Image (tube, rainbow, N blue to C red; front, side, top):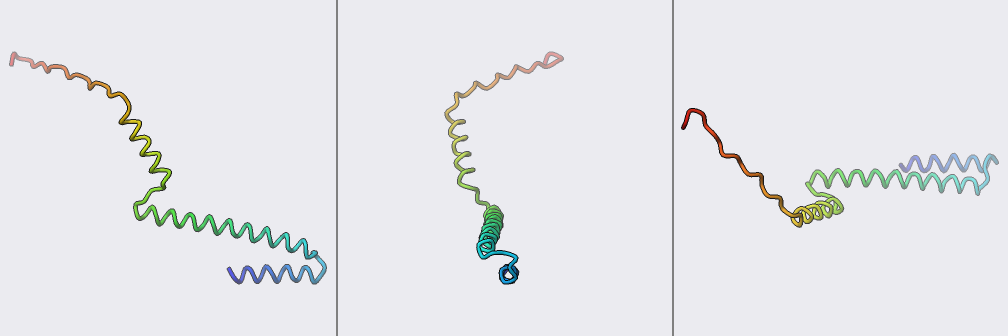
Length: 94
C-alpha cells in the first residue's frame, strides 16, 4: 500500500510540475483517492471482523435483540389448544 501512495504522489507531482494539473486539482484528486481508499479499507476490515466473530459463534447485537423480541412475542401469544387425538379403532373386535 505504501508503494501505491508514493506512486500516486509521484504521478500527481509530475503532472503539477509539467503544468498538466493545478495544485488545487491535484489536491482534490488526492483527497478523493484517499477517501475511496479509506472506504475500501473500512469494508475489508468489517468483513474480516464479521468472519472472525462468526467463526467464534457470536452473533450481532441486532440479530440477538430481534431473536429476543421474537421469543418474547411467542411467550406472550395466547396458546392454542392442542388438537385432540382420535380414539384409535381396531378391526377384528380387539
